[in-house]
Image (cartoon, rainbow, N blue to C red; front, side, top):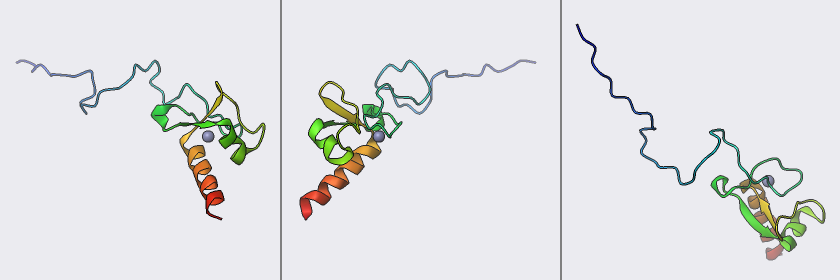
Amino acid sequence: MGFKAKARKHKADSGQADQSVVKKTKKEGEIPCGVNTCDRFADKSFGGRSLSIDNAIDVWGDGGYTERKGRVRVCKSCYRKWKKDSKAEDTY
Ligand SMILES: [Zn+2]
């Protein structure tokens, strides 16, 4: 009687390599969304974008966002909102 040795892989077998070193395995970002009413993350891996202050004021108003190094980091959904709003302004 013998046990067959099972070849186990510790790594995921999907073959996709992580681009960056992740400290936590939880799906949490490091950069919070700059919009005050939003609690998502604006990391690049989450599809976050960086807007200028003027752009942020147009949509969220003065004080409705948090500045970060002269830019406003927004999450994916906030960026889409901004894009939609700025488009609407351009087309009238
Ligand atoms: Zn957001």
